[in-house]
Image (cartoon, rainbow, N blue to C red; front, side):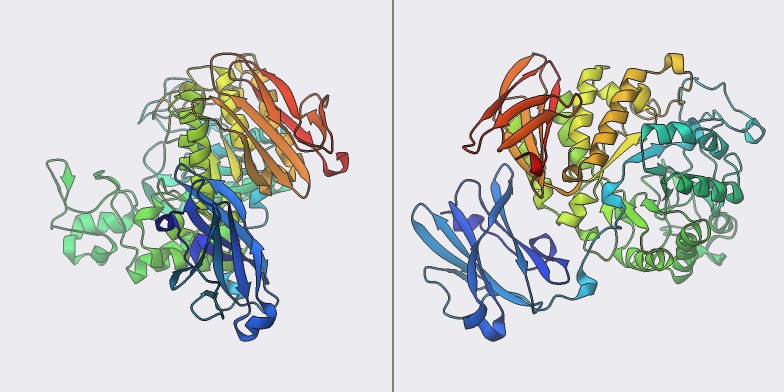
Length: 588
């Protein structure tokens, strides 16, 4: 029994409220070390009458640890608790004061959940966990109005570059709403649409104005209304970390130096503003001179940006924000931002761009979720790069699930590519079977899947700017078989609540194997998924729970598992093939 590996803290992802009278409690132990972990808990004021010991469930494992979880009802909304650890005939009790061989005689020295306040229950907007997102890069999606094209616009479908324009605009999006509805997505995420000088618009000139090459504010309001009429939510992208060098306050600072009324709106290290050997004398995004970093601790800056946050949600009617370079902005600003946005619309979604551990932003006082690039890396490294075997993939997934509360996991923004990465098909070496296997993992994983525009019809391309090509609207040049696959997997996810909020349990995850299999379960309904990430066809024996199992696509019966259990379904998986089986509770 390796006690040095045992860890618990009575907050964050280790102890958190799930509703007004329930909490989840978790503890970490060395992988494979404990035969059983149990939770000792009760009310501190009536300990002798209320205390009990209940077994915990091994939620997930990663490469080093097992993570155990218990869901506890709290009629009086408070609890003291400790843990019973059992390994190879040895028992230890773990409390806030340490490890003991004897069961605590009373509640003193135990961990404590002092009181469950309703305001501490953190959950993302109710619609998010059921959503399927679609990311639109407006300049490359569709040109619906040639009258607002930039003067240097190039012919649609040309080679994407870092500084060229093809005329995509909001009218182009309006013209292709049928495509999105036919695909089945229920939310869209736009990269920035505010006035800026670049094709990507991350160098904002005016946060309260639609870029004239895209349209105007009234058109955006009409577009949001049109989306809503089709049951599709709209999330906008904003950069509050930095602006563009054409942003009027920054222009004023360039002209007047430290005498400008806006001098404290930015982080200036040396006057006058200049660039010395490629390094600006003011803070920027990276070392990009055209993207000066804003001082979000300045009261006037905060007032301006919080009005921006309110305006687009309350006046235009959008459904949330994706926040660029979110980790470089101070936490205090994000707390005020959340208050402002949730006041405008309590159901607005707040999504941060964070490429590393995002837990500090996901405590219920800042973001609802973060872009789940750790998940992206796990899938790509398993499916496309072969850097992870099945054991490595399951360890990565286990670590991610253990690192966050369930509500955060269920709302995580799961992408396989974006405007910041090479396209999925490119990463898969143009192998569409490999691509589909990756998409299956994405759509059967907890969280919110997002399709990058054009993936559904076979767009490809390497890193920026190659990942930002013009959308192909000629159906004779679209991969319609791939489109139907996306339609099917989106439809199936919508039909199966277990894929959205159900528990995840691995069925096959052996070291050295490229075959992963796992199960999602909710209220007795089960979905079993098997994916072959190798170049060779394989036959697998998939262990299944009792009941009738059918194939998700054909509805053909695959296996009958008797009450005795321990039965296995034999599955033939081609290279980069997959199988998805479903069993409803009533089929047991």
